[in-house]
Length: 187
Image (cartoon, rainbow, N blue to C red; front, side, top):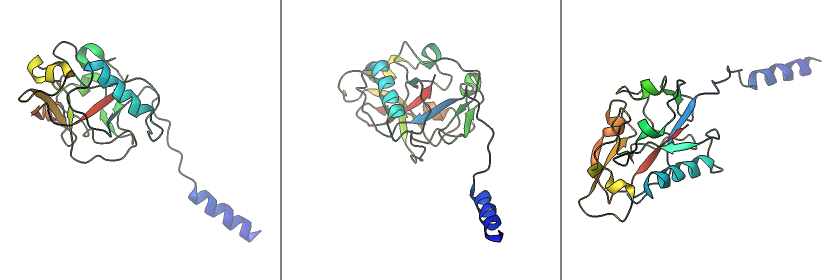
């Protein structure tokens, strides 16, 4: 009997503590594991890349529709995204913004620095073509709308996985020959 009580006690200690259920309306955000040159196939091609990584067997992100934080000089997250009134979170549950308004106010609570598998990606850049407020930058900083082969001296706006200020989306203007990740947002 004493051994049974001891085993029950040990088993209870090893069981994970109950965590309150997450808000089922939270929107998950990650950066892709793969990097891409500017020929993304436009916004649709970039969205397809985000969706493929979200759906990959190694991914831990919830199922759903994922779109790239990317603009092409005309369309942008401000025109393409569902503007959630719920929190945006990383795959590990850490909150980056309270809602879409907070997401686009110029600062994040945490940097977007995890892949779809929940692992840190380190310091990386990701293509954006997007101001931190979700609007498009001028076409000349969208690598020709993310289509075609890289042309020397063409540029695209990129963000950073280590920034929480506006630099998360507007880190630098980079040459289109570069190979960067994408930031993917659940809708």
